[in-house]
Image (tube, rainbow, N blue to C red; front, side, top):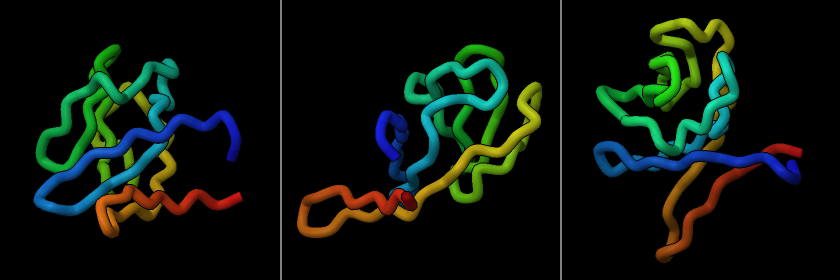
Length: 82
């Protein structure tokens, strides 16, 4: 998926990867906070579950895409379907 930006975070030792673009107003989620398993959009405070992408708090209505991710031998591996 060329041109797609993916945000990555680690919580409780597990790696999570998800689309970096908020589904509400297309703000970057990379600058958002991660709290209690959710990434908070810095623009309008929509919250998305980092494991499933589900919307936890609006104004967003559409979930994020999430990707399988892991650290292996010091390298970050993110599986992005074509």
